[in-house]
Image (cartoon, rainbow, N blue to C red; front, side, top):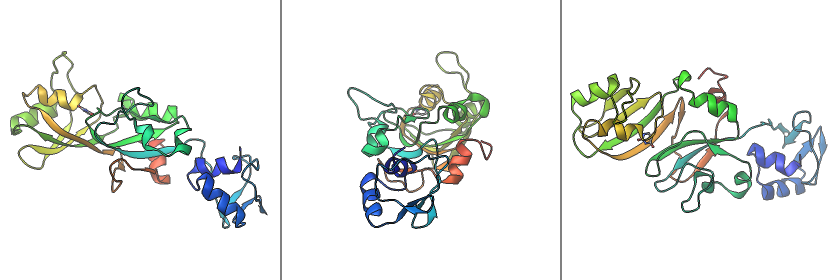
Length: 235
Ligand code: URA
């Protein structure tokens, strides 16, 4: 792998930042200063350092984006902007895909990765990975509505949802915690109670939080989050 690709794929330096760092003799491979971006490294075997600090190579990339309204959770779309379009060029080349989908009008946390196995596991109904959403409804939500949805509610197609948790913040807004992800699930749950979701935002996926990522922006997952996502910390 080229040295500049190694840096961009680890998220440490973009290609142009890597060029500058190479010129300033800040990069070494196995203890030798390297000055060329096309220098070939074996990411599993070679020790690459930036200013003397070892760069940990990861086979896969893990990113958290804050999806704006109107953007689709897909890798490509002929009409709409996708969550992949929110990334810079060097990351768009990496074959990342969204781990699960949010509706076009739902905002918030989407995980992008090229680690198919971990994404599959994180979405598996057997794992019961919890997702937290902030919602707002058109009409007031009663205690009966909360109880009916929390216990599992029958949707229009006859599917009965898994039990979930709701924490009301006011008469028409709150948090809902789901461990499954059926098509339009939250909208259909409230629809089954003759109410309508007017705002929906995912703010947490397992222990990974949207935090202060601005709408439309992204960040790399931290090492701790990667361990959670890849189940090294037991999602
Ligand atoms: N439930 C919905 O209805 N929509 C989403 O985007 C996510 C969960």
